[in-house]
Image 1 (tube, helix red, strand yellow):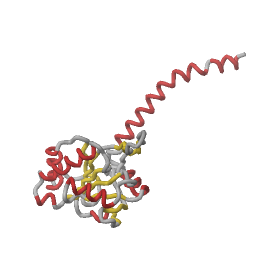
Image 2: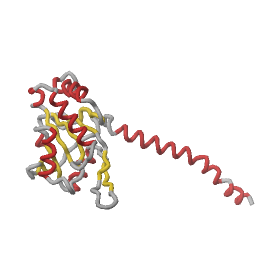
Image 3: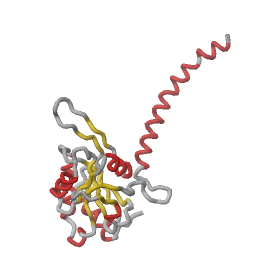
Image 4: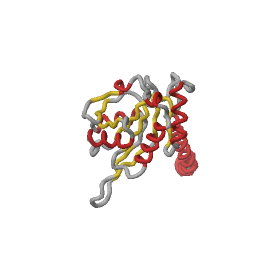
Length: 211
C-alpha cells in the first residue's frame, strides 16, 4: 500500500518542477546567445574563422585573401525584399563618410545565404551595386553553411505557397573583423551610417583596438 501511495504522489512534484525547468531552458538559451558575442577563453570573441567561398568572377577565395585589411561582413541574399538592401545601403553610406585613406584599409563583403539562386555573377553584381568595392561571395551550400556557422549566422529557407519565390529568414548583423581576421565588433540591424562611420573611424585610426 505504501508503494502505491508513493507512486500516486509523484506527478504533483513533476508539475511543480515543470515551470522551473521551462524557465531554466529560456535562461540557458538567452545566455547562449549572449555568449556568442562574449570573449572566449583567450579573451577573443567566438565570432569568425576560416572560410572557403567563390567570388563574383567565379574564383575560389578564402579568408586569407582578405588578410591585411579590416573586413566589414554582412550575410544576406539578393532576393531579400527589404532588410538586406537597407543594411547594404547603410554600409555604403557609412563608408562614404570615411576618408579615402580609411576606405583603403577596409573591405566590405556580402556573403549570400542563398547559394541556390545567388550564383557568382549574380552575387558579384549585387554587391557592387551597393558599393563599388564591395565583394560578393557565394559557394556550395556546404561552404556557405560553414561560413555562417563560423559567424553565428542564423538562416532558414521559407517556402511560399503557389508560384511566389521563396524567402530566406535570417539574422541581420554586420561584423567588423580586423586585419588578422579577429572579431572587433558588430553593428545591429538599423545602425545609422553616422554611428557606423564613427566607430569604424575609431578602429581604423587605432583609438579603439581589438581585444
